[in-house]
Image (cartoon, rainbow, N blue to C red; front, side):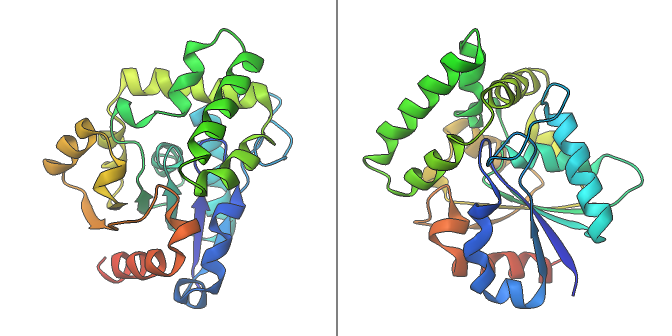
Length: 233
């Protein structure tokens, strides 16, 4: 059974993909969901946490499991696109679940650069998630996972995401991968991202009415869309 590596969003963990275990996708592909170092209670790296260091972890995981496809959520899409650049070549398909295409997509991770140190960012970020969870119940699970993250790793990764999005257009880096599918609900995307997407070469599939955490609240629909993308390669 071919393997598919699943890369979580900023501060999230492998459990975001657990609902997919009971879908058709899991009956046809071996899903390898990763907890990145420093997140979901895992120990942080001994070096600063950055997009590139996490890309190395994803690349190694893909090689170890002989996986050529990555399903990547949000900021995880940047990590996956950087992993796809690495040699020996391992990754030739990325299915991006509302991954970062423009700087405006870093609406969670980009907050980190507004704070001088890790503890202050963590406090502010968790407070923001508490507020969002009042109207978006799906955020409550995410907030619990973020609370397990190493504060320094969370802050370092967020700051690096801001730097990356200022230096590059994330969608252009993503588009360098030979086969990319973008799964999204337009209601969850900033206008700048929708404008960029309209003129982009990315293949796309809409998931209307789904939240940003599609693997959590719409696992069967997401399974259907991912299989549609894989069968359309």
